[in-house]
Length: 284
Image 1 (cartoon, one colour):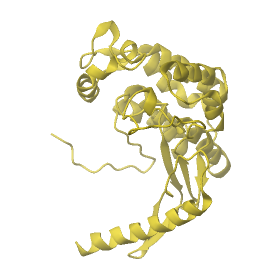
Image 2 (cartoon, rainbow, N blue to C red):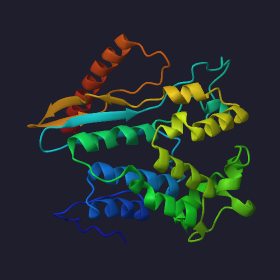
Image 3 (cartoon, rainbow, N blue to C red):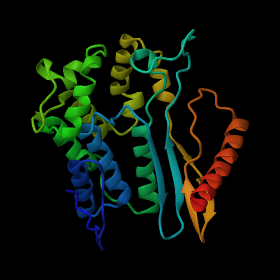
């Protein structure tokens, strides 16, 4: 049965889809960190403990605000390959041929960490935010029913993706619920990000390994594409609603050569769609 009792706190609060990731964020708050630092720690921990839904190779979106009027969004949508293949049919849903954009999650961590330092007096060292994630990856954590279900559902696809079976089906099987799941290769990647900073993922030795793996798998992404990857720190879309204000991200795009006129028009369209949705919701 779900606990429907409201959570209350006067000192701080975290939440995530995995208890161990929430624990990572709570540790940061207890160490004197702020909400941005806690969220980075949660994201890193989720990359380990929630592999069926997230990871270092994904996108991330941040809306940051405070009582003093700070309001910023960081859009980590990734960078399209500079030389994508010419598809005669639909782009595949999975596999190397579908890997056409880089991952900007790690770069968003870098950018919001800078915001934490300059706007929220963040004091915690970058490397400290990865301690829990490194522990979970190196020493393991219990497999959840959710992870077991989704990995079992996709078991037939694991062998078709280079390296996936070795990582997610060690010993040739999906780990059972509550079984300890260890990811030493991910631990090594996290250690380099913690030690050398976020750009290690895009420009360092780790980036070189990622680029070689992508090339071997058949993806058009290159190390040059990784190096170009930058999340975007943008003004948010803002809509007045019932005496308050709703805030959202600007529309993302993954074009290697973004069209500025389209970016402006799409932002306007998104604002109108948001207002239309609010009108429908109010009428309903």
